Length: 489
Image (cartoon, rainbow, N blue to C red; front, side):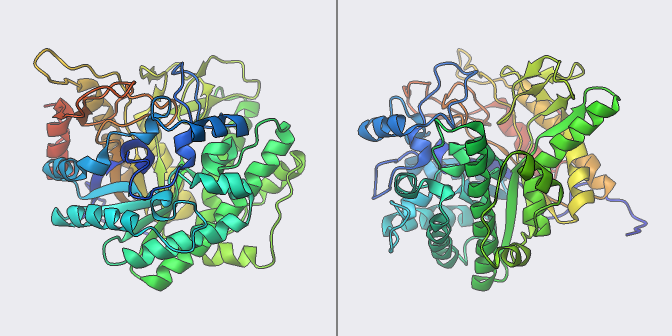
């Protein structure tokens, strides 16, 4: 569409803010009737290079259920947002947040997942949180499923591997859509839905001990059930409140070909398709043809019921949200050095710096991603996770000087602005995570993302005191100027 006037910056009403997940901040894991979740049986990693998110077996799950402490399961304690939510939201408001992305812990509302009636104490907690956000005119952006399915559904029916879980999920979504229809406008169905193809964390299905072919089958079948659940939830939510905006959420795996060799270019294209498959289904409302060959070559047979394709078409999302932390390189022969990243390992790009955790820092990749999404889908976009995990240190006078975080965020916001000038329709930016929290991949506290330091170590020791870092005032100014002032403090 031709327009004479090119945007010069972020639109009025841009949703600046931060993002967290209940299982990483909330705590209160055994209070007020809450049930145990899949996140709360994942042990803390002994080595920060070893992700433990999907390392769950029937034996390890039974051991976790028998353990009534949070010593080995830090996500049970989070950073006690459950008791500190008023203080934390006041700090978000001080920064000027327009939006706060959070999740509702499904097991706080339906402790077993298949309960016929909700837990009123859980519903009342989120009423208090949403009321507190409203006091400061902060829009909640609510993720319905963020790696925290009720554990009973794994025990009973192996999580999303069972089609029964769709109805359990829809009972939950109907309850929260109805309860909070006047308090929440923006919803996301599944966090980083592509994580389901990595196993337990996303699927809630134990597949340890199965062959690779069997694992692939169960993971993609679980994913299909989530696609159907998401599409039905979109229709359900729009019926309850036509003003709802309900989006998908993808972990973006931006990749580049290692060389101009056509084999490398094709390998990178295939890697990109494998990442965009999820949003192709949720935004376009159908399975893309290129996946047919993948399924055939990997022995995957998706069990679809009559009407499933119509459900996907009718339940397309309103917008596309995503996480973006890093990029990787793809080659046909996989001969390069590898680097760590969000959910995946990839080949190293010699032109990029890396974080303390080995994640490649690529601000321009965010602009590339935004343009790729906009060109492919033509729906509003929302960056709901982007941030730098670092081992922040308190100075002798109790300060945190995190100029490295300011630099990381500034360079990514600059590239977002360039994408807006390119014509991308960008709704907002909720960086991960505004307050220090428990790491998703390794359950450690040392990997800090926040503008707000929390006095707690990896073993759970500390006062839980909240301390503003240097980046706190910087982000405050960014929001106040709608992204125009990105200078250092």
